[in-house]
Length: 285
Image (cartoon, rainbow, N blue to C red; front, side, top):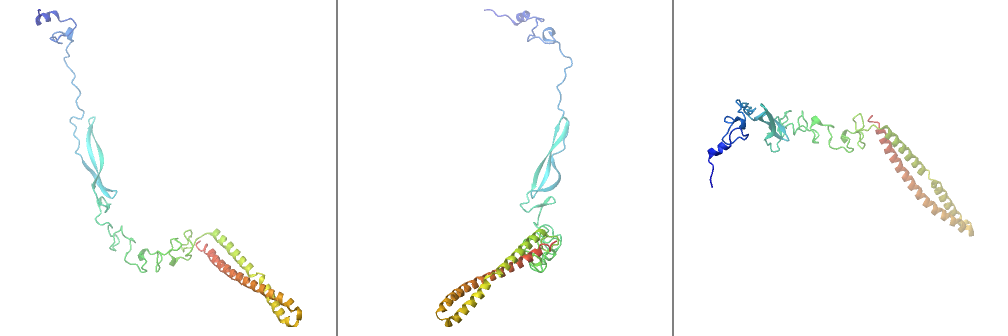
């Protein structure tokens, strides 16, 4: 077997065959390898090359959020040849439940004593006044006392007017315009007046119970029968029996009548109470 030398191979693949051989180039064989570019275009460079971004860091003033101290942190970066930034909210101080005020943790939970009474404004019961002055000992300082001389916490009808100053302590006076604890409701007044009238009418009916007349007639007939019995001979029982029956019936009727009279008195008392309430429903107007 015989082998061809490289010189022979080169001679067998001369320039101009259309195939750029390994030993050919644009300079030695432009026909096969193409012409050389005398001024090649360099690849594009980084647009941010040479752009200097400001240093990252906190910006703005600290502020309060959720009872702790926060501040914005700014991160700079380059994009398309310009520097830009993004901001992140970072907690810089945990106040541990004491709270935050004016961008800092509160040292005293009650805050500043703005009225000079020794109590910080957050804990101040009566801002602008001395919390220690409480003449009626109701727990409300005099400067904010609603009803001086009385316990402000006692408010039976829960209308905001303490019982000691409430002219209508059993009625919700929140609808009133005079602030005296009495409501302003003309329709309710008319409704109560109607009920009062009906109660008085029922009392009159019970007082006029007809059994009262029968009581006295029965007693009178019984007494007369008993008195005449000795003088009537055999007819004494005829008189006496109905007399006794009349007497018993009259006694029962008397008891019933007295009961009705008692009920009539109770109805009048209730009518008086309702009448008083009716008048109060316009005392707040």
